[in-house]
Image 1 (cartoon, rainbow, N blue to C red):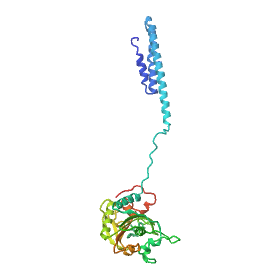
Image 2: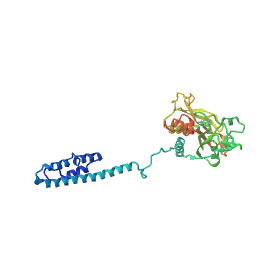
Image 3: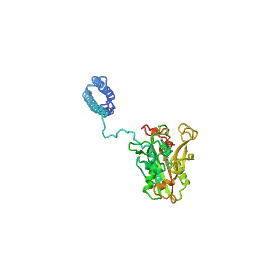
Image 4: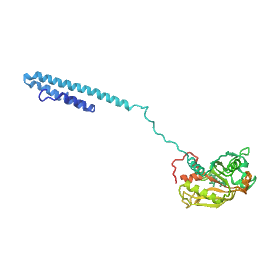
Length: 338
Ligand code: FA5
């Protein structure tokens, strides 16, 4: 190597470390350009002592070849990298995971029903079902609601042309359960019911009830009260104020209504509870002796309690849904749990 000349390896490494085309251009200007270092060395040959000129000229030629070849190599590499990047930008990676889509969830009615079924099956109840299109016997007659009795008017009944009834309540399943089982009987029966009602925030023409029936010996109102209070407190997850009011239903004696403190106004009174501070949730009572008899059970031997929970209202209270129509119009979104 000539004294004062750069090392070939230095030039080659410098070219290899150029990160992009701009850096490579700087490299070219510095070594191979008209005012570059190798050109300057070539120009200096004329002033070198004659005996050194051949050796210096050969050394400069080696430097120039090395610089040019290092530039060529790096240029090909950078061109290839740029081409790859452009290709990747337009790539569709068919192995990549697909975009996340929002998943559906179980409807609040289904969610709460699972809890209710879990609660009652844990207490030894079984789940029974009955037809949604009923006959008058199961929907009314056997429940101590004779034909032409004004009590029938309470349930705004739809009738088909053949005088079948889209059932007005799940109490018809009480009858079917007592006809097909021997006491002791413990059943719950969730299901849809239908009424010719004016629809508002707490009333729908098609809604859900959960019927409960227990038939055994020595059954009292205390058993019913405890069962209903325990249920409400378990489902609502906190102690809400409850109250029992006497009520009339032809198929129970005595009859009562369990009202639950309105969660929307904490009992102060609002449009949903119609200013009362309570929402009527679960009617019930002791099974009327005539109903037991109509199912072939001796009322002197067997007693029972029954209830018919307004399940949509329970769901509304639990999830803070302030309008029953939201449960059916497909616009349920954020569900807040009280
Ligand atoms: C009955 O349907 C009785 N079969 C309940 C019963 C069963 C009483 C066993 C005694 C023994 P009622 O018509 O009140 O009762 O309805 C029961 C519950 O359903 C009501 O307390 C209320 O929470 C709910 N409910 C009534 N009408 C509607 C409606 N249009 N929309 C939504 N929920 C309703």
